[in-house]
Length: 295
Image (tube, rainbow, N blue to C red):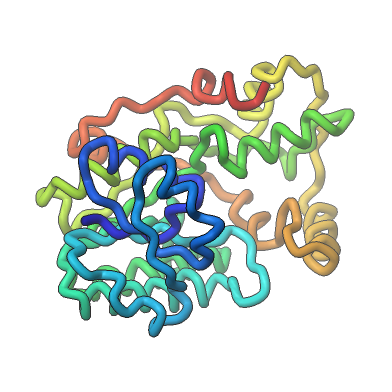
């Protein structure tokens, strides 16, 4: 039995799908079981009503579980869903539940750029979560993906929505920051492969695609895939920060935040050679991967 937190999300859905295809029994911790019934119907996933922010609700979740996969994270804060509560407290709660339930194997979703001295609170709290996992005494493996793309992703599809609706394609800053998008199917492949790989215990793997793009290049590829001829218009960072401040005050789910702007000012690239060798993954090309999802 594999237990997954965040199974209703973009990455969790694909991991649950691939795990079931490979014959694993899967249990998902979900806050709202009635809204997660599709996991039962589509993939035969067992649902457990719990919330990683409430440790008492996790009691019994680890029964018969051999491996826990922790995916829950937020890119935007909302109400109780703060970076500190979700990334740090939530990870601590699920790690403690795993230890109490006798689970030995634990796979953790972090993020490329996570570090103690990160500029953004997102990256800092992701690092704090990693530290909890590393100090847990569990047989852990950590994954640090770059931007993940696929049919239900929030990053590429949000950009596509802007390109579709706006008369131009806005790019924050000079657009020369680099990123290395990785396909959701490849990320899920590595997680499921790690369940069976004792050699990956105690290792952290960067998950990135085969090609590095500047943001300018990525936007050009995206508009080409959409068949749109939108001119790239660069938005100076001071203006973007002011816009983010207003949007955060007015919207529960702003299109971008000040914390995200900090992350956009640094490159998001890595070295996937360790993961490629360990999990025998063949990285999908971004241009081909987005062709169907953005038209």
